[in-house]
Image (cartoon, rainbow, N blue to C red; front, side):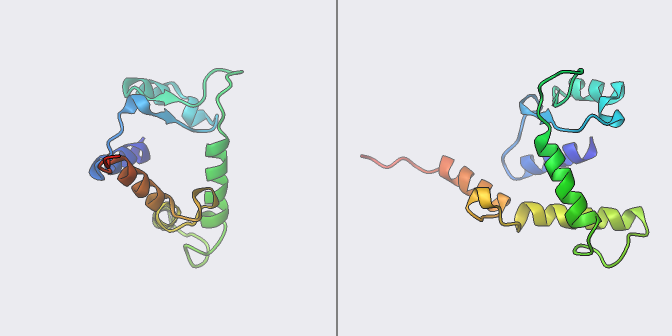
Length: 134
């Protein structure tokens, strides 16, 4: 829940707050995400889980894809760290660097090769344009 809370705080800090009722917490079906305490906490915060009972049609492809990229680009390579990780702190530091790169410098083909943060800024700027008389 800490990364989720950090994300909500960052959105608010940027002037684009998100109400928890607008969120869906994407995860895989691991035991930590299906635990009663986790799902109860999501429910208390008004956040819908992306998984449910067996047979639900929720698609976790995005989460699986992001986890795969994280493991390939951050954990299994030395791009964000020299050599094997020796401590949890090293993993956390490398993860923070990867998340920063992923959001702020990664060129995304679906976004016309613009980093996600820049694309989002342009989106919000377009919403705030003053209408021009016809």
